[in-house]
Image 1 (cartoon, rainbow, N blue to C red):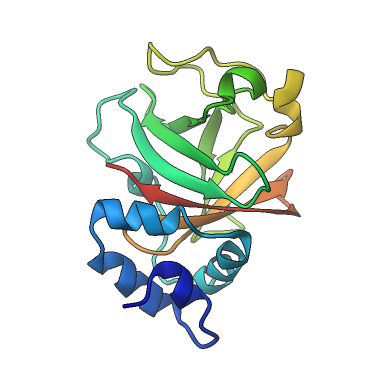
Image 2 (cartoon, one colour):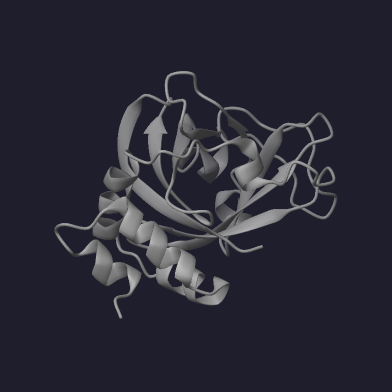
Length: 194
């Protein structure tokens, strides 16, 4: 049986084949295979997902009936050379917006990268993780919300918008853009952990 990496190395693979493969995996298997993807796999997945039919909406990240400030984590793997594993954790604010932060072992040093999730009218099938906007509230036991334009945080999150594309019911692929318009050579994949 092929694993996700092997499937993405096939020349003639389709998004529907990737989606079907992911559906057949247990949650633990899915997280394991997704977080083993290298940059080349993530680039290919991003390109394949451009043709996806499902539209990502806010309920994909946080259930519509979720209580405010309850966290919903996704396990992540990025294409950077170091420190590639992380979590993006989403929550619904008391106003109904979707927000979140990045949970990883160097967050205390680099910064947690709080963000607000939006829809971009120019990219209707995708969701935009906007680091240029900060939520006004967070779960009580989370780190303090700080500007993404200060300290070391600015080198990672300042002026960045990550766009997400649907891959399956539990997996999305993302790419970073400067100011939401300039492509950056950074991709990441997220797998639902709840």
